[in-house]
Image 1: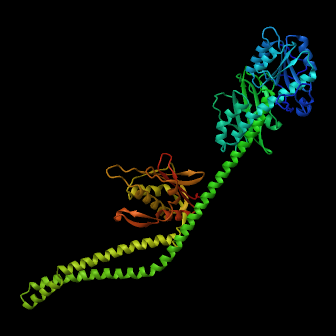
Image 2 (image 1 turned 135 degrees about the vertical axis):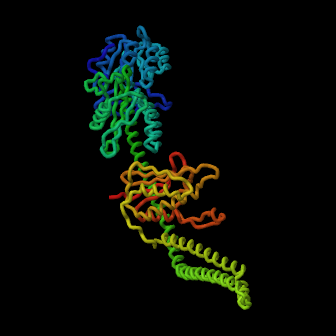
Image 3 (image 1 turned 60 degrees about the horizontal axis):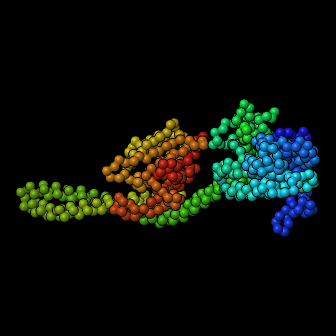
Length: 609
């Protein structure tokens, strides 16, 4: 193999040509002598600062040297090989845009050379040169994948334009997978989707052994390496160095392990690396680095260009995913705010109704309660009078005086069993009425709290752990409690309001998921800790399964079945009141699904100073 002394080193970057040519009416390239087949722009205009890489394969040294010096040096990078086997060896270390191979050579002839080159690099276009009048063998080469043929001796102008058309065909052919990959990439909505499909999409355009994606960390902006499943250990500092070069230069950086600026020492499994800057607008969004192993060809100019377009699409996809994430977060915030407003509006409406009902019932209730208290007092007095009459009658009946005996009989008749039953019924009726009155008073208290008329508990610094432990020790609930807290958890809350709210939530859980007869009750777990500097109480019930719709309305006042009172219907303001009491002290109450099933009531309390 020979290398023309005027060409660039194999790893030097070059830019792929972008030209256009006209087709004849039948869709076949126009004849070589036709002006319509010529490119509309020069190579210098289309590839400033770069050139088209050409591999010349010929067993005649004079012919190789003639082509190397005849093709303009400012347009073409020419590498020569003295036969098919030498060309295969060269192609194992790098890629070319176009190959020009002689048809008749010792060892591997033109047909075999075309087949071998196309197998190694299907993207490379091959032009066959023949000096024979018969074109049968040249056409056979085209059947094996050759782009076109040219007669010897060479017409350099004709060869130049044939090379340009071959490169243009290659460029257009590469646009189809690029378009498909771009569509697939931009259809991904989240960052996780982009990261999970990144490797396979990049591999469709630029073959590589491994890749690394470096994205800036929030806050510091330092580039961090996203995890990669290939198991290849690559030094982070080397990746950051390559990313820095590509970002600062705002262009791809391609290095090979023989370069003096190779950053991956002492890693000996990597043969070449290609780094792209991911940028949207003025701010860099990261870097994509493609890696190939030792013995694999270095990245070609066309691969570098396809990778550049892919990197631009990747940066756009990541930015779109970021914006989608922000949009979804804002939508969730708006939905949560809307739910809060709807809930507050419902409670305000209930509060207005409660205020009116409380006002209308307070005075009649006070009079009725006073009357019942008076009736209860009268009942006790009558019962005492009845007992005294029975005792007097018994004493009179023991006297010998007939008139006293008659008086005793009359007293016993008046204070007999029927009178005793009436007195007992009156006492029980008064007691039932007083119990009902207390329930009405409790209802009015809840209505007054919903209307905002209840007093606000004074705010103080409270360790919530002992308060939670009180519920566990007293055993007032139908289900056991498990309180977990590694250390004291202080919050600035109203103790009475917090205790009342916790009691209402615990009562709700015990009523909603009561223990099944004959089975051990499942405990409720209460965990107190700090999250993001704020005290948090989590009440977890593994038995309470709630749909999303039920979770959304769980803090609304509702009507439920009271199983303790013969399955009658009653108003339940418990959770609505708990929510209101906690909200007015600056706390937040929500219900979320449990990690292993069930539901979790999550109380985020104001932090103690």
